[in-house]
Image (cartoon, rainbow, N blue to C red; front, side, top):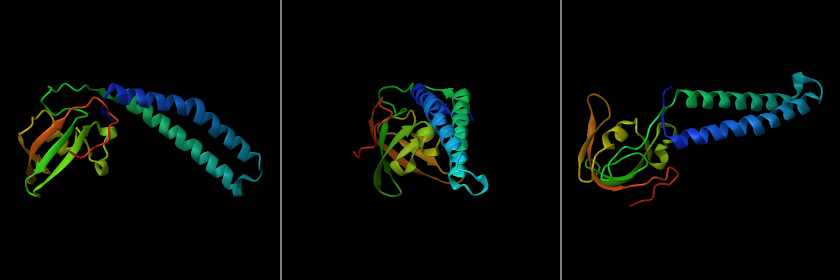
Length: 166
């Protein structure tokens, strides 16, 4: 996997793992035990649902543990006047003649529908470490792309801040 994550991302994942192991797992086992006591397991929907939930919880724990184990921990090493991790950037898209704001985040936190783009995405790679006024080329693939200009960079250390329009 080797996802690039911040220390805060790792901490949140470790908290979720602990919660799932200590609280959710215990409740899931109780639910399975209670549903099993209701009798015939071949036609017992509660038992099947409880087993499914238990298995999904265990799967999520394994996934998070693997993410934490294989993560590459990164920090924002951009200058004060450069676009960096967790910064919101206002772009002027030349082809569309419009402005759009994007927040640059780690791969696990990206949410394109809310304008949170990954540092690994073509747009994120193009924006990272550029300054206000820079004209950047955002490559879609080897043969096509488009130009944008960085209008403004809003610095932020807060990973949870939502995108506010400029």
